[in-house]
Amino acid sequence: MTDMKQFINETKERLTSPTPRFFKKIKIVGKVLIAGAGAILAPSVANVQMPGMLQEVAKALFIAGSVMVAVASAAVEGE
Image (cartoon, rainbow, N blue to C red; front, side, top):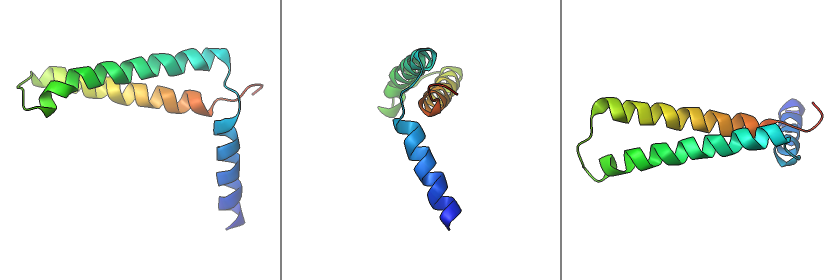
């Protein structure tokens, strides 16, 4: 049980620590990809027919952007 608490505390500390400049840029690019994917997928939520390939590309962009933001958020100065 203490291992899990230690892991949670380390994760919290890591996510609140300063992010290096390079990873800040990666985080911005990831957020742009997420926003672009959202803009592409928004009409399909409103029942507007879109090509399936376009939807698949948007889903892939969303996943890639999400992973980029998550990894960049966990990066810490000095490691």
